[in-house]
Structure formats: C-alpha cells, structure tokens
Amino acid sequence: MFSFFRKKAAPPPPVAEAPPSAVPLPPPSEPVAEVAPAVPVLPQAPDEPVVAVAAPTPAPAPAPATRQGWLSRLKAGLARTGSSIAQVFTGTQIDDTLYEELEAALLMADAGVKATEHLLADLKRRVKEAKATDPAQVKGLLVEAVTELLTPLEAALTIGRHPTTVMMVVGVNGAGKTTSIGKLTRYLAEHDAKVLLAAADTFRAAAREQLSVWAGRNQVEIVSQEGGDPAAVSFDAVNAGRARGCDVVIADTAGRLPTQLHLMEELKKIKRVITKADAGAPHEVLLVVDGNTGQNALAQVKAFDEALGLTGLVVTKLDGTAKGGVLAAIALWARERAAGPVPVYFIGVGEKLEDLQTFSAREFAQALLE
Image (cartoon, rainbow, N blue to C red; front, side, top):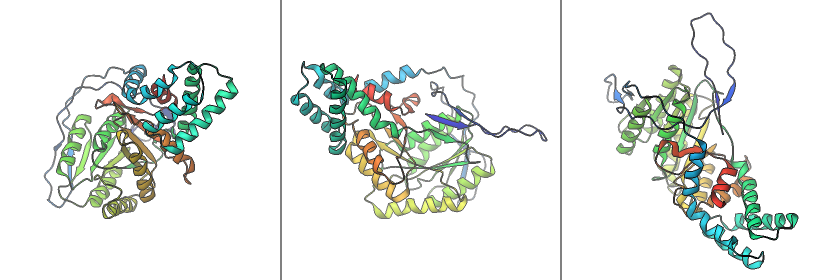
C-alpha cells in the first residue's frame, strides 16, 4: 500500500486551490533509460554543501508494470524458503509427524521459536475448526495463519501530510540501504513528487558517489559535502528542501552495527539536528534490513527501534533466501511493541527498479507457500 497526498499545483495567483486529498499510488512502472549522473551546477566553498542537479536528458515514457509479474518474481525469490515448508504437506496424513516436520521447517526458515509456536497453535486450531482431513487443506490453512500474523505489518507510506516530508534512512553496511533509497526516489519521482537527497554518509566516499548516480538517474537534486559532518549535511538538506518546495527530503546515513554504540549515538545526533531544522521531522525513520540475515534482522529492528523510534521497514534481498520466515518473527515482536507495529513499507527481491514493491501479507504468504 502506498498513499500520496497530491502536492498543490502552482497556478498563477490569485486562483485558490482545494486542500490535497489522499489517493492510492499504482505499482511502480518499468525502469526507463538511465541518464547522466548528477553534476554540480555552481562552484561552492569547500565548507559548504555541494548541490548537484541531474543532467536534464529526457527519458522515454515508462511501460506499465504488472503486479502479476512482481508476484512471480516474489514467488521465485522465496522458493528456497517455501520449498522446505511445502514438502511437509506431500504426505497423506495429518498427524504429529506432520506438525513436527512443519515446526522444523519453520525454524529452519528463521521464523524463530515464538513465531513458530504461535503459527503451530493457530494452525491446529484452524484444522480442528475446519475438520480438515487432507494435508493440502492444512497447507491452505497455514497460508491463512501466516496472512493473519503478517497483516499488522501492512501500512501505507504517506507523503503530503507535511509541506516537506523528511525521511531518515538507516541500516547496517551491506543491507542495500543506498540502493533502496535510489529505488524509493524513483518511485516517488514517477508520481510527481519533488525529491531532494541528502548524502549524510560522509564517512564513505563511495556512498556519496552511489547516491549521486541515483540522483542522476532520477533527475533529482542532491546535497553532499565531502568529509563534512553528517548531521550538518542533513540540516542543510532539510532547510534546502523546505526552501525549494520539495515534497520529500531523504537523508542517507552511514551504515551502523547496532552494537557500535558510539556510532549509534551519531545517528541520534543526526535525528536531533534534523528536528532543529524542522520541529516535526524526521517524519519517517526507515530501517533497511537484509532478509538473508534471518534472526539477526530481528535483532537489528529491535536495536534501531530502541535508539531511534522506527516508523517503517524496507526488507531487501529476499530473492534466493532460505530465511524469509523472519518476517513472522518481526510480526510477532511487533504485536508486543508498546508503540504499535513497525510497518513493512517495501520488500525487495532483486536489483531492478521494479523489484522493490509495497508489502502485502497475503501476497507474501501465498508466494511463500503456494
């Protein structure tokens, strides 16, 4: 799901406009031809952020992408996780052996002990109520159990409630954070959102370069400063985004392990400084997690949430993983979270732009088990 409050147009005064209203966004379209990476437009002093603008090379109109194609890729991506679970239902009887094998398969898929116990108890209840006699029926009931468990993770990422929505994106090294930002930027830009990127990962030169390439592909502006303070870059980007009437400002932060306490403190500082630039910001604190890391992904969610107060997740690299069951563990933890569930806004199963899509509990359960 994805909601978008359309930004007010800018017709010549004095024509008044009606307030924006929320409308759903369609799935992202197929990728279009790449354009040149962002290039500086004006020389600036070394101690000032460098503002870059993508070269205005026109791109051909994108072709529509079908949700069905995405579901096929999702099913293929989750095949390693789902195949071991599906084998449990190839027998002819519903007995203790079936449930024992299913328990082992869920644990191997990194669903975790608590989520596995929850799903087994729920499944046995459903089997009893449905008076199921065929293992194939049990498989269908498991789809329903997984869907119900994951449904609280569904939520719409909404843009437009604030004049400029500020997003702070965090995650450990290698989770696909910067790439996910690039895909999200494309997603927003395709739906008429004006986006400004902040290269707040100033410790890794390659991160700035990578984000600059994404800015060029998407033809959006980027605020960057070599060797500068990441909090200062974020502060400047928020102010610049508000001054230029941007719909969204996305701050890319340096990768952090949750055990690196001094580095986690740096993230807290960035968040505090962003709040100084905009009292209500950041409006979204998104954590990008690698689906291949299994239970470690859940540990990351807990640690980053405790430090920053997460508002959403992006789960990447689910293609080819045998650990896709970790979403069940995250969902069970989310039920116990005092502030409510942390939604999974997007999941990714590949490197292409169209391989990052909105999360649907039923689609995920069906792709996993059917």
